[in-house]
Image (tube, one colour):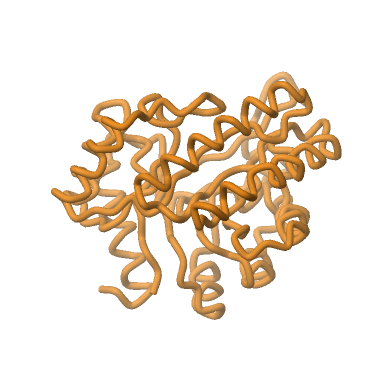
Amino acid sequence: MVDIALDPNIYYAEMSTADTLRKARELGYDYVELSPNTEFHFWHRYPKADDDFVAELKKAEKETGVKIRTLNPVFNWSAVDEQERQAQVRNWRRLLEIADQLEVRDIVTEFSGNPNTPLQCEHQWYKSIEELSGDIEKYDLRIAMEAHPYDFVETHDDAYSIVRGVNKDWLGYEFCCPHTFHLDEGKGDVEHMIKSSAPKIFEVHIADVFNHHAGGGNRYIVNPPGVDARVHQHNPVGMGEVPWDKVFDSLRDIDFDGVLSVCTFGWPETIDETNKTTLARLKKEFGQD
């Protein structure tokens, strides 16, 4: 059975991390995925959570019955600069320690790095994985990798092959629906991407997106032409071009039983209703209504 988690990123601006668990309960969620914020773990920075912060989160879990199902840190462990890479490995070690304190056993993260130096970054990522393997195994954790736009690897097939190359049961894959059209350069073949990664797919991110390749590449206009940038959204389900019927059919076909993380961003005026509606849709699709 799938676990449906809320990524409360959009609420961080107006409430504490602990209060996002209370918000999740209000919306009907049993789980949360804690993505980067300044209170806990922020992009590429050393985690700021101390023992009091951990105790506050555990208190919120007990009060609400909402469990922190996953953490979603982003550290540049693929940095070509060796001093920076070592600093990011240090960040990871502290994050893994906190995950253990919180009794969280699943972490989803990004490759990071730079698409302009893919081979060098791949070397550095494997080096970081080797250095962190002992910590990951000591805490009995699982790590799910996603290829994020502007990471050193941005496409599904390449990312999944890199994950398989580690040859560890605890290292898996995360399919990110709002990255669909980056992952296969506009084709949107979600059936292939989901089924080909079935042996290692631990998590799926749920949000919609438009195909930036459509309309002759003019779905979005980015200036100046040719700028080294990426564009995507995390829209409410139905506000985009992700083929949701194929997504859900493919997940059912592989008997997916991992985490579905609802990660709509950028629509604060309707976010409560969006998160409720998405939860209801997912429960219906996976027989939990």
